[in-house]
Length: 425
Ligand code: EPU
Image (tube, rainbow, N blue to C red; front, side):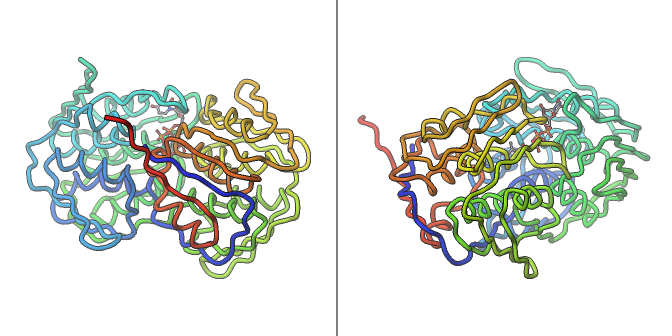
């Protein structure tokens, strides 16, 4: 298992380019199951999660090939397959978004039940509610979801749960509805840019989705979808992570390939903290304050503050002047980074689904453990700012969602070494 060794306290300089969005690419790749003809996707990052969904699609009879740097080609070669096995699904919850396309296009899906993970229980009731409303017959046996349907039929579906809308739930039901007979209305649809990107992709393949980016989606079913060529949006969470990297090291860096509209809530919070920005086209120059101001924040569905940037901003708030209150309204247990940040000298107390962050003057390097993707990113950020050396174990979590993070930050002057740990035979 690899670990990172970070020498903290160094200034960053220069530019860093944001890669394609993992969470947009994953469902779009799954949507290739719906199409007849070749799908060419550009701006697809080389990440472990992308490799996992590629493997799942191959077991489902798709040819998936990286033809050049960030370009993937996907095409159906065997449409008789319908099973996504446990060994692969258990590596990544996003595999659940093969369920809708399989049942819509092939009439039969057998997908391993995804488990929970460190950020919470993560139920899939909304996915099942939506697909059942479209007429899929779904059973759960021996850890597998089995879904069957002759042809799905459009329906009116309310997709809200106790924490609001569901990103992949909306994606799954929308993907199934594009090939259903008649009209589907999804109310309380997720509005996240990644869901919008999937809808734009589907429309490019011949789907008829209206209301993209709004909580009521109207989908008129079509008989078939064709292939297309499509460019995936830039990763807003990676963009936010780099912006915090500049701010926490008090360095004026420029982050390029940013869609600022996708991170409006985040930029607004950063301004409240005292960070200034100079925008030029899709580039954002970060002008950090000497010391960040404490703020309160609540994670919410888009366009609210994203949960996927909660851990990273907490690393920054841990050195702010004053007391910040960070409340999770998406995943009430997503605070695995708190104990690790405290090992680095932060003063954070978890209280229910909130964390009270008492800003300290500085963090100090320490051995810490990555627990999930965004928590790992928070530890990298803390390590960049800390005095001394930080050793982060289990960085495979970060490889799931950040492309070459140590190289990208290294090119701006950070000192991050990846060490591959070998175990005795
Ligand atoms: N929920 C339900 N029932 C469901 C589905 C979700 O109650 O059927 C609840 C969840 O437990 C959670 C809330 O609804 O409390 C929102 O979950 P959502 O379904 O929106 O999450 P997701 O679609 O499984 C995606 C991202 C996550 C991101 C969330 C929230 C992908 C591959 N994953 O997950 O990204 O945190 O939306 O924005 O798109 C990450 O990239 O690190 C990551 C975890």
